[in-house]
Image 1 (spheres, rainbow, N blue to C red):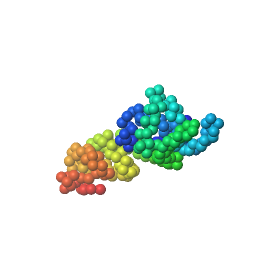
Image 2 (image 1 turned 90 degrees about the vertical axis):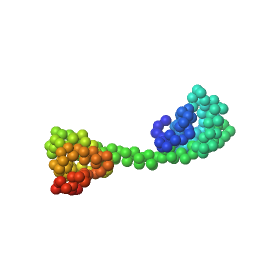
Image 3 (image 1 turned 45 degrees about the vertical axis):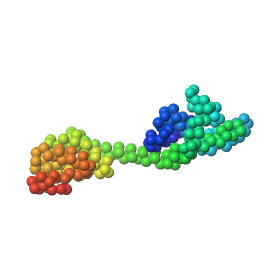
Image 4 (image 1 turned 45 degrees about the horizontal axis):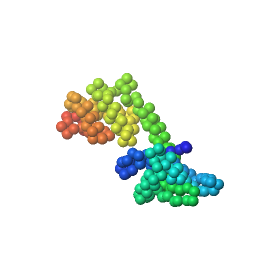
Length: 221
């Protein structure tokens, strides 16, 4: 048993998620059906079992699902799943063929590889960005940050810019600091208030409040 399955968060709104026993059984089914096509020997008969299918009997599923499950309970559960087009069952001479409908939505090999590669790239990019801009996050490594600018607030603002795909280069950070200096000159204590305002509004830069525009040489950069 190797590999994995994927679940969309919307399953939390599905009826099966509301009953823990059924949800556990459903996950167990997804984990036990084939992730690739196989041929199985059952009582000396070779039977093909495709991706997203299993050849367990009803009694076999009762054993797989746990001590509280009986054959009758399994049949009742399977009827619920079939009624919601989640599975299909086919009674065979020596077993039962169960097929999970839309199995690829739970496990798509190509998509899984692509998503894992994308996740790795994003993690690498985030690490590179953090390393590149790390000097902007610590006082001892950023001599240009004036005492009147709250370091923690400024860090949060820089991280907000990064989340908006802005790169905090030395030049751009210098301009941001100059803008805050101008705001502080116009009104003492206003620089930190402006950082908070920009964070709350999701802005990528600073905008001089209306009541200060006439008091500073820099209006908006």
